[in-house]
Amino acid sequence: MNAAFRARRLGWLLCCLAMPAGAAAASHGAHVVVIDAMRFTPQVIQVRPGDSITWENHDLVAHNVTANAAGVRSGDLAPGQSWRYTVPAGGSFEYACSLHPVMTGRVELEAAGPRDHTGPRDPPAKVK
Ligand SMILES: [Cu+2]
Image (cartoon, rainbow, N blue to C red; front, top):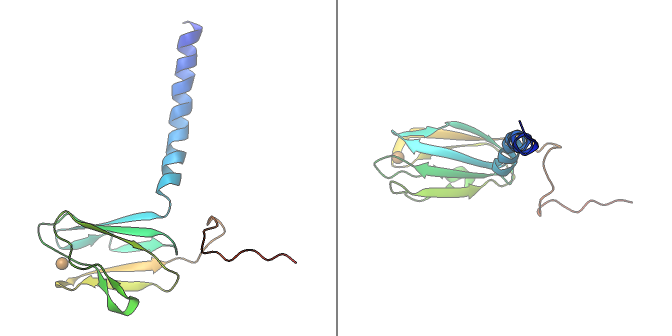
């Protein structure tokens, strides 16, 4: 075994250790709901204000994401289309596909926690 081989092996190890953390950080706050077989999956999604949800229509027919009370209307999504929505501050809401009212889902808002990073919509901290 020579030194170059050992260094390369160490590099691989470090790379593998670092990967999961980086991937998790990159996907933080971005959620995907797949529309397929007349169903929203996952049916219940837990998000925080500022997160984004992308509905992807993998089905063979058009669907939409509609929650009139929450002011959420994707419009009809043809097969293969997707729609991205940024979750505002507010409450949890139920939604449905207005074309197929049996298709329902729920967006649950978690309280903003201390792990949230400061976003542009956060008020500036006032220190006296
Ligand atoms: Cu539908």
